[in-house]
Amino acid sequence: MKIAEIRELSTKDLLEKVDTEMTNYNQMVLNHSISPLENPAQIKQLRRSIARMKTELRQRELNNK
Image (cartoon, rainbow, N blue to C red; front, side, top):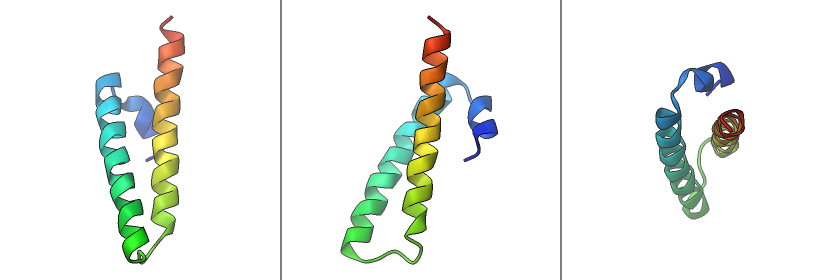
């Protein structure tokens, strides 16, 4: 997910998106440990996407204080 797309989301939507993506990430890592994924780079992309969303949430938190 691009940073521009993340900034367009509301805070509530962003929190829900982080929660679902974390669930997907944990499931993907578990599946990869059992049997290798066709594209293990997906794990890296998903982890970075989650980090981008969390960074945007933190920036919003700091700007609202």
